[in-house]
Image (cartoon, rainbow, N blue to C red):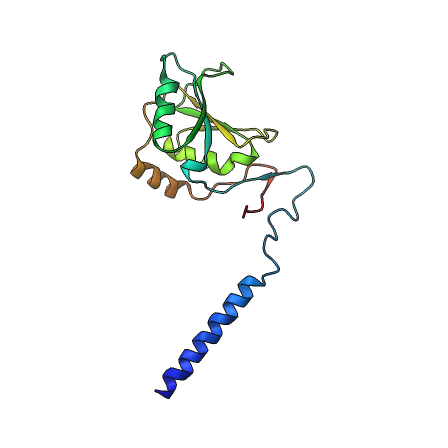
Length: 173
């Protein structure tokens, strides 16, 4: 009985110590933006929920209405679809899709890659200032992945990688 009391007291002290250490952590945020070389951009590599991802859906195929159909699919999956229509860059896309994005949408683009089972191409622009991802559907596109396939693909993809000449942006609170 006495041993149980001693163990209980030790557990309480350990818990208090851990809570105090976490609350008083003076290194919180260190390494995120500090030490980033001059000229490098801060990239948001946070993997977002679909409801927090803003996208434009563009069609780069000859199939009329494809952007509208897939935009509706993305809306049904809770994405924030801002624009839809033909690709404003008027580039042909032979592959499944192209994801165009900047530093503020690195994590969002990583999530979207899973919806194309890692078959999309990335066009990262370090000068892009918005947090949007342009989803450009190509001639190789057939359909978006199912929820199960997306989850498996995310597991295969791992964490969002940092683009070249970028540092991780501090986490937003």
